[in-house]
Every structure is written in C-alpha cells, then in structure tokens.
Amino acid sequence: MKEKIKVLLDEIRSLSVTRLEEVESLRIKYLSKKGEVSVLFNEFRDVLNEEKREVGQLLNELKTEAQDKINSLKEQLSNASVNTEKFDLTRTAEPVRLGTRHPLSLVKNEIIDIFSRIGFSIAEGPEIEDDWHVFGALNFPPEHPARDMQDTFFIEKNPDIVLRTHTSSVQTRVMSKQKPPIRMLFPGRVYRNEAISYRAHCFFHQVEGLYIDKDVSFADLKQALMYFAKEMFGESTEIRLRPSYFPFTEPSAEMDISCNLCGGKGCPFCKHTGWVEILGCGMVDPNVLENCGIDSKIYSGYAFGMGVERITNLKYQVKDLRMFSENDVRFLEQFKAAY
Ligand code: PHE
Image 1: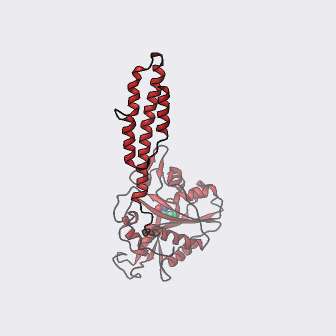
Image 2: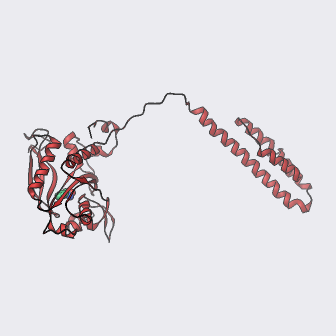
Image 3: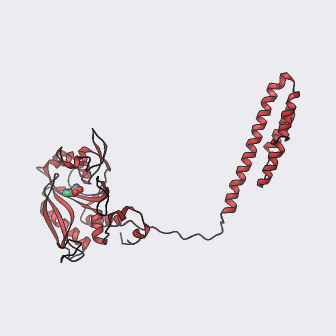
C-alpha cells in the first residue's frame, strides 16, 4: 500500500499539460469517485490495524497534493491564455495623449522667474502648520477672526494645528532659521474655510515674497512690485498702492494694476474702475522680526503675497475658479506657454 501511494505521488508530481481540457481529464483520472486516489482510499479498509495511522496520513497527503496540483495546472493555463489570446503584441501602439503643464504651474513658474532675475531664491514650508508659525509669530492677536473655525481648517485644537491659511507661515520659519540678508519667495498651496463657488475655493495658491536687510525701505518694495507688474502684464501696466491692514506688516498696502483688459478705461471686469487688485504687501512689522529672533533696530524688510489663481485669471480670463481643480484636459490643454 505504501509503495502504491509513493508511485502515485511521483506520477502526480510530474504531471504537465498544455490545454485546459486535459486538466479536467486528469481530475477525473485521479480524484473522481472511481479515480485512482479514491480507489486507494477504498483499499484502506484492508490495511493492518497497526499501520492504519501511518497509511491514513500518507493517503490524506496524497489527496491534498493531487488537488493542489490540479488547481495549479488550471491556474497556469488560464493565466497563459490571457497573455496569448487577449493581447496581440504585434499591433501598432495607440497614440499616447501628451499632458500639458497646469496653468497655475505656468503662472507660478513665471512669477518665480521674474523675481529670480532680481535675486530672489525659493523656500517651501509645510501645509500643516502650528498656530505660532501661521498666526502667533505674525502678530495676530489671540481673538483675531482668522483664528476662528469659520475661517480656518483646524486639524487639532490645544495645541492648535491648522492647514495654513497663507504662505506667510514660511516667512516665520525662514526668518527663525536664517540670518539676514534674506531675499526669498515662498510659493505654495493654502487653505481657507470658504464655500466653493466660481470665485472662491477652499484651497488656492500663493506666492509670498520677503526681503530683509539693513535699510530696506518702502520705496524698494514699490520698485520691486512695479518691475513685477510690468514684466508680468506688459510695459504699459501701471500700479497703485492703497493703504490697508495686515497684522504682520506696518505700514500695509494692497496693490492694484491698471486693468489689462480695457487698459484702464473701465470695463465690466474691473467693475468700471480701471483697476484690479492683485496683492497685499507692506513693511515687516518689527514685532514679527523680534518674534523670529531678528534685531529690528538693525534690520528692516518688506513682504508681499499674491494669489496665483488671481494672476492667472487676469492673464487668461478664466471666469470660474473651479476649472483649475477639475482636471478637465480640454481646459488644461489650452495653456501652452513658455513656462
Ligand atoms: N498673507 C496675506 C494674505 O494671505 C498677504 C500678504 C503677504 C500681505 C505679505 C502682506 C505681506 O492675504
């Protein structure tokens, strides 16, 4: 009996097939009711009592191995049929649709390129930030509305961890680590708790600029921004600065450019004013410098922050902000600029 089991086992181990139907006939040959394995099970009755234990075990092993072998043969063949029957490897390849750069990346790269020509380098920071870097160090008073759940996405409370609401958080990180002179741009994604519509989204992109050195003045800020506006929107572009307020700059201003659609004459886009707002800016508040370990008696600096979506809208007249995040290639393919 033991000898028979061994012979059968060797036979089953060496089985090989080329077609699926053969597997089925092997299954019948060995495992069906009258199959060879089942026959041995019937003969088990005649095995001597003292051998039953050992032979029983061998029989069971034989059966499992036979089943496994049949299953694996079946699997091999069905995989092989996928490879050989469904794919015609001689067919010519289908054309691959090439992607294009996202309009927001194009505009971001253009902003970076313009400022890099006057000595700005780049730094990035985390999108998940602590209260200190987004608000505290930037001179936001404890009761400021931006610290409210209505305006800001909180990830944790006490200690507060938020999705950054502006790229000014990278200012505080860089100033805390680096000694002036600092002349840097901070591009990145920011988040605000806004209802999504054609003109607002819960995330958007900013590019922040920071220049800290001895004797940096408001005139330097204005000159850098005027250079930027003309490079970005054309030589005839005019700028104007309106007084404004940010906790982290003093004085603060918002900058408008002459409407690039009507050339400043007035149109629906600029609400017939001839001007469109593009960024916030100002002289870095001495409190912010001190918070970041920079001596405000020796150093001064300016900062500005602009929305990439806003600049892109002005350049390409995209009317609905949501288009930027819908990933519709028909929309995205329209932007084929140099950047
Ligand atoms: N962080 C400001 C905002 O998000 C923009 C800004 C940056 C203003 C730097 C002044 C200086 O609106």
